[in-house]
Amino acid sequence: MLRFGSLLTLVWVIVCVGCVSGPSERAGGKRRGPVRIGFSLDTLKEERWQRDRDLFVAKAKELGAETLVQAANSDDALQLQQAENLLTQGIDVLVVVPHNAETSAAIVELAKKQGVPVISYDRLIRHADVDLYVSFDNLRVGEMQARYLLDRAPAGNYVLIEGAPTDNNAHLYHEGHMKVLGPAVKSGKVKIVLEQWAREWLPSEALKHTENALTQANNQVAAVVASNDGLAGGVVQALEEQGLAGKVLVSGQDADLAALQRIVEGKQTMTVYKPIKLLAERAAEAAVRLARGEKVETNGVLNNGRKDVPSILLDPIVVDKNNIVDTVVKDGFHRLEDIYRNVPRDQWPRVASSRVVDSSSRAN
Image (cartoon, rainbow, N blue to C red; front, side):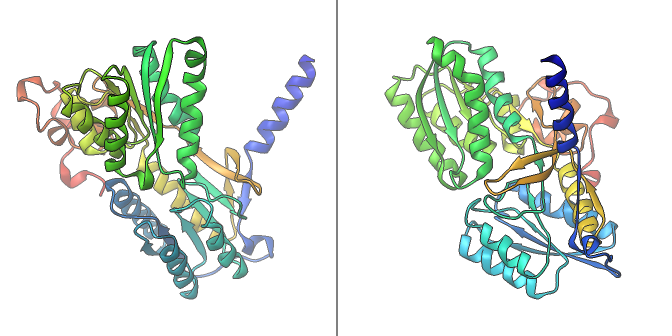
């Protein structure tokens, strides 16, 4: 049995750590000349997606590629139309941040008809022949959020504010949440008084759901698992209205500036930092290699309902008040003075001047 288990493990490693190549190489040739990348984004309304765009475009340019960017403002029909437009402009590879994980399969189908490889960026497109998925380990993100809160509140009423039901990542976060919380719920130590999905990741949805949960639980809530920082903002607003901000644990994700400010003010408990620079640059490198028909090294696979998609999965990082300086500030993701803007100066952490990154060197 031990030998059999070892064999299975070896096979799994071989499957997961593989590579994928673009159609040019499979056809026996490689593209010559500048690469054109189409980058189809769900939205640019949130701070993090603006960062993704700028970092991706900069890295692609460094590699000698041109990037054509379109953002759909969370409109499925518009994203399909924009993708079609990008394909008519002779792009060599299409990178997609899908608004809807299911309907975006139509985008992949369009690209495939023109022999254009597709990279699913951060969010996985389902039921489609995606060539590559580049993201963070989103199941682990959900586990990190729930584990951090459960370690600090091992018993009591919990509220789960999940993301948009159309986003495959939201389902992975939820799976991670329940993987951690499930045993505590089964034992009776934790009771989930409300679990709701937030349409379009809207903070207003989180506000509404949290208000309802507080009413149902008579304000007796130990923790709120909010799937991202935007939702955490709505959660904290609801808690503030009841004088509970800072008394109820609240998770988040993305290390948005507003969330980090809430963390140092004591209103939000933690966030999950996903080094976007690494994500954007790895995706840009992969896009250029696919366009040139070169192999892309992968470290995992994720099934999207149609196939096991070769994947590049990066490691997320838990951030709280104790390690903000050593993570987001050190990386230049946010400035210390911006994070602590609403905190008296004598309460700022002592750091060497070289550790406080000037805005001119910060990634945009």
